[in-house]
Image (cartoon, protein in one colour):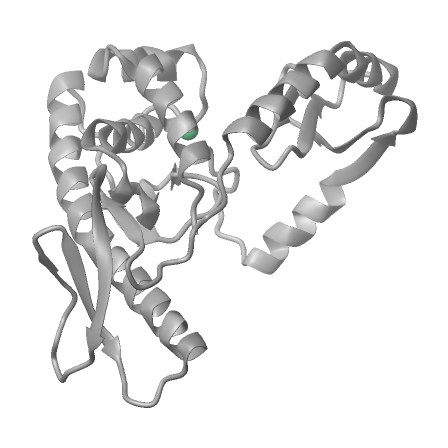
Length: 266
Ligand SMILES: [Zn+2]
């Protein structure tokens, strides 16, 4: 992902900037509302998100009438996209006793057990034992405790796994491309809307939910962010780098989109 600010801004400043630039537009005759934004890109762009919402971005040079004509010309495409998402999109399932979760694409079952001093979550075969139960919890409190313990475990597991993978791929990418660009830092946290991002300084953020994916898809996301150390946008130079590293990058990208729809993030 592109981080648009060279100077760090507070999230309040970022939000203020975003709100100023965005506006909600409704086309009553076409039964469509979309979020519109002027930006520094060269072309008009339209995206439909998995929740069905539509965003349109346009350079300042394109007149409003042309933007509207563009949107109207793509109404069938919006309908198709929304139908696809409605068919494929699941609902994030909360972590509960006996529910199934994934690690590197493999399924396992959650089993809450009584909390003990220094006890940590651990695998027993295909079961992840989560020491999180205290006497006297009602059903609701028990569910919350399981959810919290699971998310804590996932964040820790993701930090370890993604950290190791990033170190390995960072070196591999430098060797393959024959340059010295290197990641500066890694932050792993629960992200709802993207799998990863990379700042101009080389600070990489990855979604904790990535640990659910099979390794080839995780590697795609990491390589994608490492390519942003060399090309900050998604232009031809970026894609050429990515294809050098992963000749099947296009296939992996498609699989990640489907993965995201079938396994909504919590
Ligand atoms: Zn990107």
